[in-house]
Length: 295
Image (cartoon, rainbow, N blue to C red; front, side, top):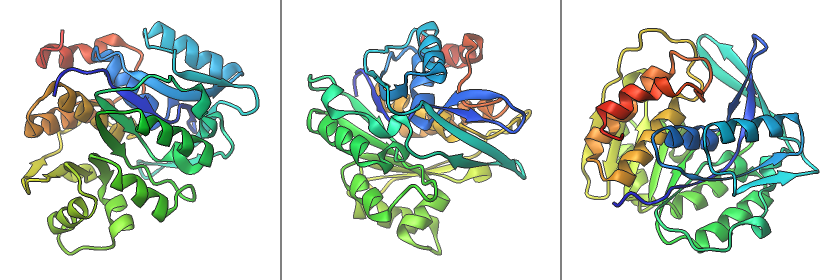
C-alpha cells in the first residue's frame, strides 16, 4: 500500500484522572496524535464544544501541527470528558452522555471523496448523528476501512457493532471484546478464524494484554507477538490506541504484518511508562522514528 493520507473519525475528549490531572484522549484522537508524530499528517474528523476544553484541544492540535480543517465546533454540546478510575492497575471509565463527539454532522463533512485508510472506533457511534456522518463518509471513501473496537458499557449494542464489522476490511479488538461479540471459544486462534471469516476481513488483530497480540489474515496465516517488558508502568490508558496507530502506520507504508505487530507492541510498551495517552514531547517518538527509518 502506498503512503496515502489517513482519515481518522471519532471522539476527542479529556480523560480526568483520580489525581486531578486532565489529559486529552479518545481512541481516534490518540491514534491521530501518534500518526502526526510519525509524519503522517492524518485528517482528524471529530467535534468539540465551544468551551474551554475545546479551546485547549485546538491549541494542542495547532502546536502539534495537526490539521484542524475537519474538526467541527458545537455550540450546544460540551467537549467530551471521561472520568478514569484505576483499579488494580487497570483503567475503568465513566463516560458522560450527550457530548460534542456524539454529534459529528454529516452536513459539515468535506464533500470530496477520500482514498487510503479510513479508521474509526465504536464509542462515537453510540449516537445516530455520528453514525450517519460515518455512513456518509464511507460512501465517499475509496480505500480500506480499519475498525478499532472499543466496547464501553453501556454505550454499545451488539447488532450495531456487528454491522460495522461487516463494512470493515481490518479490525482490531481485545480478547474480551472478541468473546463479547462472538461468544466463548476454547481456542482463541479458532475463534479468531471464525470471526475473520464471518465478517470477511482482510485481517483481524486481537490484543491479549500481558500475553501480547495475535493476528489472522484472509489467507489463513497467523502471526503472534510477545509483549515487550516495560521498564515502568504508570498507567495503561491508551496502550491499545498506541498499538493501533502503528498498525495503521505499517499498513499504510506496506510493512510486513509480523514486523508491524512487533513495532506496535514495542511502541505500546513504551507508552505505558507515561501518564495518559497523548504525549506532547516529540523526543518520546524520536527513537522509533529513527529505528523505523521514518525521518
